[in-house]
Image (cartoon, rainbow, N blue to C red):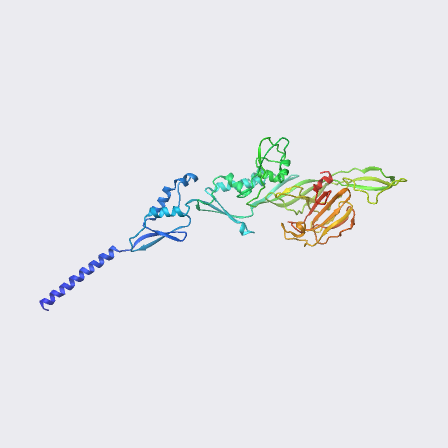
Length: 503
């Protein structure tokens, strides 16, 4: 090889080494770096080199949130996503700029507990509750339960030391919420409602998020019953709204303010109850006519005496309401003895007796067989007056329903199936199959939720004790029962039917 060729070869090798060294240095300078892409609500805000720095910036600057909720740490928005990435680029965004953009566009978060309330029957009624401390929810739920159940009974059930039933009494066999409730720790958007006070949360559970709050100032002569009635509540609803009062007989202090807001429970608390109690069976008044006695003769030949039944029944109570249907076990402790009055019908010369003598006040029969249970009285229910009483038992389905006095049938409806669709069924105006009878002295009686097989027709004259239909579950009804209503003056001028029987 010539000297010239050797020099050329050396130059080529030398230049190659220079190029290789330059390439290797450049590759080393452009090696991939780990950075973090920041996304908020799926929108990319930028790229940063230190994820922890952003978290620290958020936590250090959100002093107001820490003070408001008494927490040590504040976290990024729940919709913030940070994705780790590798790139050869050295271009990154300023962390403070990213922080300010986040602050402008969304709320930050704090750590707490998310309680999911799932309504198994209606998904649209499911919701969530946010708390910082699980105890806030537990204590609020206890307050909710104790609004519907005596505190002493609740404590005895929880501690498994309920009183044994000797003669009468009751035992709670099970209690639970109907909804599915799950609690999980998580990050909560500070823009959402976060409960930190158990009393506030219990008020939400009882009345909802935006109740039409009403208060009343107690005046001289007020009672829980009178205040409740004046504000379209029954006494049980009043006691739920005012848990400091333990019974309807509690005396009210003049000047005190009470809550008369209609409850709208956000949970469904149910408990199974076994109960043994004695029921007074009110005697009825019967009239016997004697043609050997002159008109005007009126004598009680058999004095009335109330009977006494021992009732044993099991049923489920839902937010303080018992079911309309009942299947009691009944033991007669004392037979009822009806009062019998002998009335003279002999007409002296020149004396006129009407063909249809008027009903004597108090001379009313009972609309069902014995063995009945009154499951609801003449009270306000859910802001509406329950204009009658609900009578169950006595055989329930298709058990006889009787006219309580002589009269004329003025209304019959039998267009509903015997078993309706449940509460809210509008068939028959909610009353289902029904009969209305007009009596003397301007009285009217209504018998509702009957079976479809109604036994009378409009214009028909009926006698006291005549069967007019059977106990059904038609219309807006949650079980077999009779809705029995009484009016005077007009068919809709209702009053408490128990007043007919001295109640």
